[in-house]
Image 1 (spheres, rainbow, N blue to C red):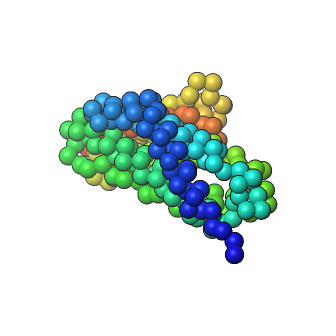
Image 2: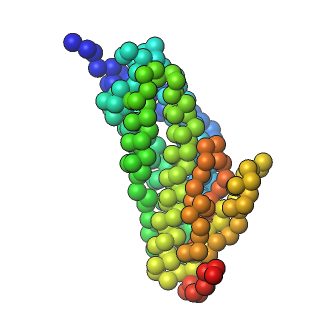
Image 3: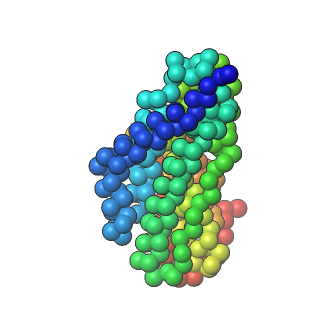
Length: 231
């Protein structure tokens, strides 16, 4: 009878991630900034990158073709090991992003609770399917590196999108800002700027791999003006 290694793998990855997260000065400093009511979405984005990096490191320490049955990360292993860890990252980063939004709301004099982003279950499923389809895990181990960071960043982006939409529907002014990172590619540089919601191109919300641009939002009290879109 085949031995299910999922429980042992999950426990090891969880323990490693908790240790890394708890001892990461950068992660803890960013959390403190949120708890002190001083964080913005720039900080929330940085926190998501740090958290994603730490999980990617934990995966790399415990997953390889050598430890997996037949060198593969089968679908059932992915469901039992990868999914809970991605869901945990979502919870950590979503909690932080909502707290940041509520601080920004309070500073703007807006008595509205921060809205929580939905978890991207289809994206998680896509990651698991891609890993399970490969005959040799080491050939696709990269999927649990930068794509994990990208997935975690998207939690913050989705939080912004949900709150911007919520505020706009409430009749408040809503402006989204995308800031290109240093040495950004041409595509990212072209997207940099300020956008009055709902006139925000879909590409503003998109990211390519290794995309560290910042999407941010500063709520403002006051009724929105109807601005005609481009003809």
